[in-house]
Length: 82
Image 1: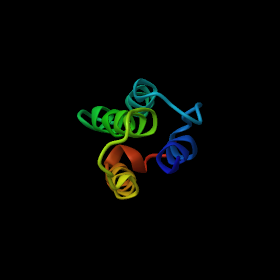
Image 2 (image 1 turned 120 degrees about the vertical axis):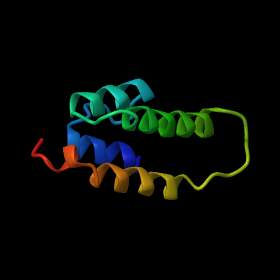
Image 3 (image 1 turned 60 degrees about the vertical axis):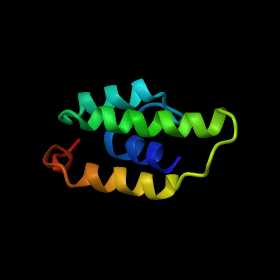
Image 4 (image 1 turned 180 degrees about the vertical axis):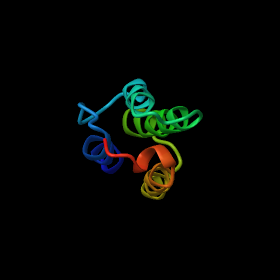
């Protein structure tokens, strides 16, 4: 939810619970260079697998969300007004 909320506020992602493809498309429209859209989509695929899949070993998704957001904020394209 944190990462999706960030993308909604920062980049205008129109969906509260986006699919990985919607995340990648949003980042591509915003001008994010490869491989960032793919990495973000993979993060959301992992979230979906944890949320909807069978029980699996615990992953620190809060740390992964923090890392994703921090990496997006350090990219030059992210500093432009959206």
